[in-house]
Length: 495
Image (cartoon, rainbow, N blue to C red; front, side):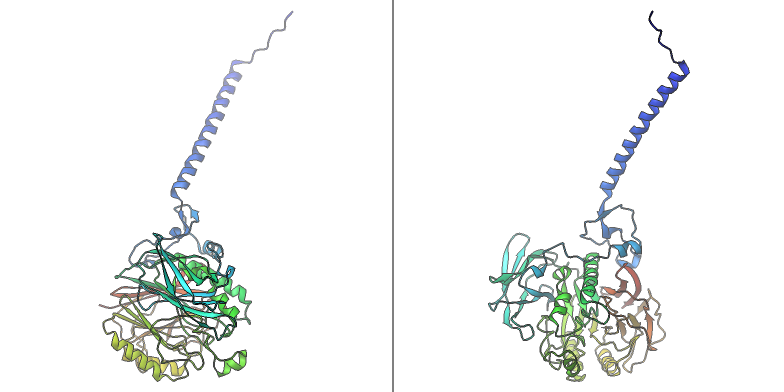
């Protein structure tokens, strides 16, 4: 006899069907939500720098900056200082390294005009060097270098060349060398020709090789991280100042390689300044044991170089250049020829260019500092500034950032202006003095303020400065570079 199948109660059957349908519905919703999130993330992915939190004054004209970093995050993400710090990394991979070739110490310097870029490099070949310069259409030009045996690097030859006829906003690739050996191919994007605003960057005292503090390779890696960040975060910068003490030992080729051989420096023009560690004098010759020679000049190729203001052994004089409506006077404050040569140079150049709107004087030694001040420096700079209507003096050397008051020809401060960070001063009398701190974090000094110093950044971190100059305003921000926060800001306005 067949066994009769047991029937489930109706209520149990209905409950099972409902549970089954709920499970199917839940799975469907999860799949849909996952796809929606994926699609939104893909659509909203943009470069890392577009998510950096910027204060309204970070871009004074209110415009957005273009960037080239390929790292993608959510559109609404605001990077915290901690996240910025975690992303503060060197760049040794985005292009071939110079050290893979026989070419050494490649540097790109500011040109005498906006359509010129100057090059300097060392090669083991005695044959004349050249630059292969190729535009985005594949058309190549060659520019021949002046080649001479190096007096400071045994077995190498110094090559100096200039590329001219560069078009604003155009993209190029280039190689330097000759048939005995070429550098890798590097990219250069010319600055935008913006007559209404000039943007540039300022760094100081990389001083690679400050061995009392840390190994040179550690400093060099931090210097690379600083360069990578500022060039990436301020892509519209026209050029980069370095206010002296490129190296710790003027005669160390290792220090120069660790200072120069960084990929970001192959993408922007450098305006180097002579520091006390960059050139020999009687004291450093005995201290370092190197012969006196042209160490600084063999590594850099600056425009409009004067025969005045030369160092005792290194024949690098003062120089100048003009961008937009700004005249930059760059002094060799380590000259052995006396302060009157700088006064003569400044008077001559400013007389030749009477129509510029702004005048900025740059040298290594700081006249009004949060460290030891240089009495003779402040006196001759006060005379130069007053006699030539200098708006701003930029300096370094102190390894601590500070901003002094507006000063007159007698080294007296104007005390009635607002000197708080973020302030704007209209048609001020006198000259403003700013001392940039170390941009590599190689060494920090503790402040011992001059009474004329109105702001000091006492914390220890690498700094860099961004300047935006228009017809009416000279605006600058000083950044703590490792987490990209503004630690000082100031504006001079001319009606």
